[in-house]
Image 1: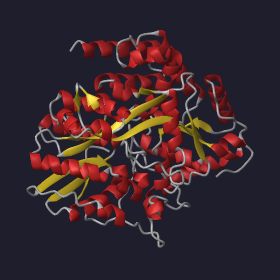
Image 2 (image 1 turned 90 degrees about the vertical axis):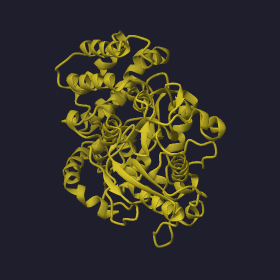
Image 3 (image 1 turned 60 degrees about the horizontal axis):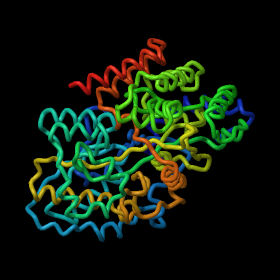
Image 4 (image 1 turned 180 degrees about the vertical axis):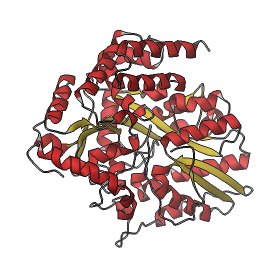
Length: 485
């Protein structure tokens, strides 16, 4: 694990120096792109697993003093991973012609995926899967470019909502509607996940995760500064002010590509609009040029002005938000249940880490789905093999071996319960979302051209270049332009 972390020690040292002085303020010491890495999965070279999302499942992290706990419950006494169980289900009984499959996936999950794909290929000699790895925004760009040039891979990772809708609208993804009926997917996958991958009247992929977002926080920093978990927006504001007063940046966030900052803005709008009105905004049936949006953006503007975000956050990469959180210079980070794995995969223990639902007064949490989409031009044999590979890669057996490389629990009706010893916050987040409800995360609710306007105006507000009122008007104009196409 330490070898994976060395390359980030220089930047982490800077953050660490800041953290030491900031923690002292509380009176106590405290604790991508278009190119891809293509692996034929037999390569045993060490891999960098930094980069992610959701949206970006940013599972890059660092703490050279900690030991990687990924796969702990499946490891042998010498620390090696025991793959006996997953090998027992790797032979999928494929009898078709030899096929070559290409899969585009996330760099953050490379280490576990590489070994599992190697096992799958060895067990099925007539199937060879080659995986190419991208960071979150890199895979978005690469897939869109491939769709436009007619060069899509056999299957690819994607999100639901507008991100997945693009490939439905452009006629490049396989329609699973009839297949799902024949194979009774309504009995196999969770309703919430199925709903989020049903796009444009068709089931557009196989769901691989269902995710909810909350506010992760450093329990040690809250305790040292005398802060209770906030239950109201006023208490949240007061917590941010107290942290800032004690030299700690309240919220780790990063503006590059927009989606990470968006996670907080959508909570402000949920608070101002309420559940019913926010749902109308997310479905584009209510005008975004309204008081609720303006007030939500005004709160974001205030947070920028008060210094509640890191210096230079507008141009910072979301890949790095974990760094300040892990080192203690930032107290909170708005993330999904994958963050348990994010930190552990990068050597950070969860001893001082917990979460709370953002106090938006509705109790609802932002949610989204992930899936594998499939090239509609696959032959019958290729489609059969690609589905079999997906079912293997996202099986209970695979997740037991590499639990921190999945956004658990799997979105299946037969999914294993989450191991609280490995991912202590996950089940509570899922249970809370079930009790209180969810809303669709904004960058899956918005078409890309509308999301881009929101992202641009987020930056402009932070840089004092545009007002919240101007942003609300511009977003609504982009929605109307989209609807009138």
